[in-house]
Length: 213
Ligand code: FES
Image 1 (spheres, rainbow, N blue to C red):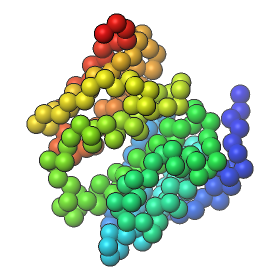
Image 2 (cartoon, protein in one colour; image 1 turned 45 degrees about the vertical axis):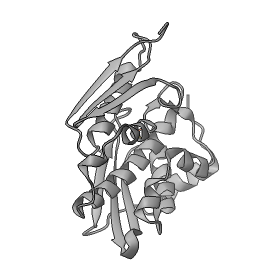
Image 3 (cartoon, helix red, strand yellow; image 1 turned 60 degrees about the vertical axis):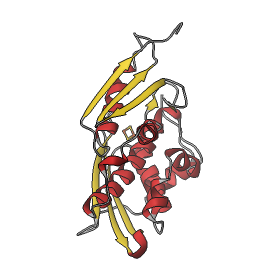
Image 4 (cartoon, rainbow, N blue to C red; image 1 turned 135 degrees about the vertical axis):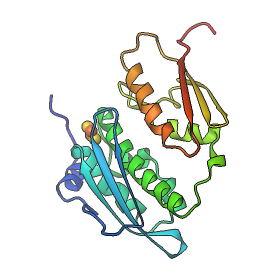
């Protein structure tokens, strides 16, 4: 069955803003989506006051990834890196006038690319500190892991029961049915996202199941 996109998504897909490469960027990132295997590259030019002066993307993904990358780069341009870090995938979906839930992960990929590029900049300028690793930072990342059949993140769905961080070791306890067909995909996506965080040496993900505890 064909997916129906609204006119704004189609417009951004057909005439994407900020598509291309920045030569000698201040920061860049290439990230992939475990959900579909697609990739996106983001390039940044950062000016005084940590403002994103220019941003470009290359998408190796689907129509909604191109459309969300177009809108995300529009949203990020002219913002400080702190402000850009706060842009959520839900905001991108909202700005596009909505996406089919099965395509939410495409907008997550665009946001992941932006955040990874900003982290690359912080790393290059010596401002990404290992001690910043905390349960809150981990939880923030888990807001970007979508449970595919619902199109909602696993934190909002209350599938994350516990997050522990100790000396670079992250332990995450989940609450899914043991035979949930999406569990492996979710676990893989968590690993991918958490391994990107500064100071992570080990990740333990345990599914506690659902039920009477
Ligand atoms: Fe892969 Fe959209 S299906 S990015």
